[in-house]
Image 1 (cartoon, rainbow, N blue to C red):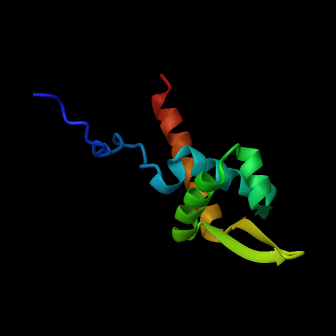
Image 2 (cartoon, rainbow, N blue to C red):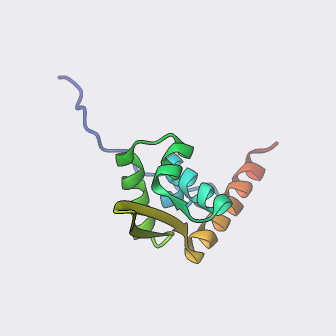
Length: 114
């Protein structure tokens, strides 16, 4: 009988004792790039962020929505000379989540070192 080609992912294993869980919203590569870029550069327009991270419009939109839904980024839409303009900014909650994530990553690194 052929194997199922289900797209379901295996459940995430719990972190070993003493190692904190990583925030799954930020841990995804693209979303980590977005929050890192916003933390370093402040409010950034859609086109500039897309170029900096080498993303497609759709990819940036989907990941930005996840971060916005989590309360980690603020999205402002306006018009500049009748052209739509979208700007992203890290919220205080997003800044705190990134700091927690970085602390957790440091703990993972320390736990992995001999």
